[in-house]
Length: 419
Image (cartoon, rainbow, N blue to C red; front, top):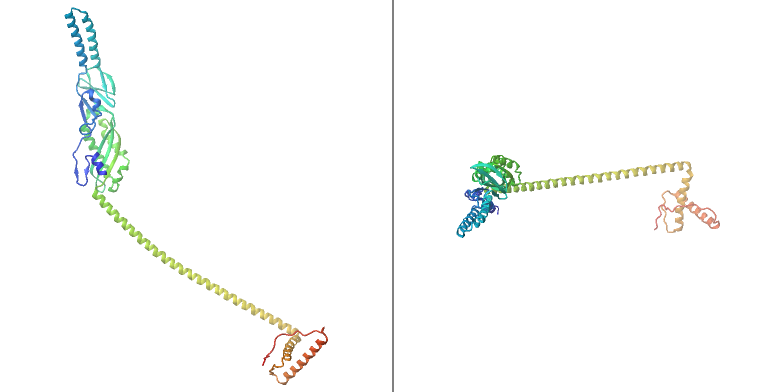
């Protein structure tokens, strides 16, 4: 679509696929017409489709021939009619009437109409006199309008083919320059419209080539968004001697060769693929590193847990050891106190021992089938019988006197076995 736009609006553009250039053409033209047709000529395109910017007027008698002819006819008719009729009053009426038409014809020759949107250049005897603005002017017949120069903004297409970049890539650039003619005298008498077309085209192309030479091929596509104030100033300096003022410069098309663009796209695609592969490798490496880090952290955590468990076990063992020590100390304290008590009351231990023996005897007395194993000979036997007699006496006493105190006995038995 861009190539179609280029071929339509820029016939000088290069067809990059074939490398052929279309024939040259002229954008700024002039035309020669009578002054009364100049208004239409300044707004009508010529055969090439371009509107003329300068009109060269053909020399034309500004006295109205129609009014003069009417005046002559009226005067001749009045004279002839008065001679034939013999009435000279008709001559007196025809002369003023013909004089009116004659004065009207002469007066209209002093009126010059300059079309709107144009300058008029005046000449007297072939020499430039002055420049007048649009509108109706009163000028003597010996002062003529030699040129009409447009005052509108003029667009100018500037195609540049195979402009080398900084890295020597041939690029195509097309710009649209708009300007106005600020000094009609200098524009008309310094150069013709067609010659200015060639001069201005060359100046624009040289300036664009110099600008393209300062950039790389990667920046060519960005020229359409680039500030063109420096380019406009350079063109203003080049066209100022011809009375031309730059309005605006727009770069509307900038593109490297198609083959170069394809190679650049292929290279960028390869670079993107390499970058993607490098990124994937980096991701895999990072994943591997993260896995190793996680495994190392897991090992460290496990070792830490085991160390904590070992410390807990050590603390428990220390607590158990401390408990054992405290229990041993308590037992030692209890034994020492018991020993002190025994030392203080030696009969109390014997009393407790006899109480235990008495409890055994009670068990024997209530169980006739019990067998007592004696290990001390006749002494133990005699002691057992004496204990039995003592227990029986206590039983009788308890039956006769309920208020009598009884010995507190233990429930323990010593070496009693039922047969």
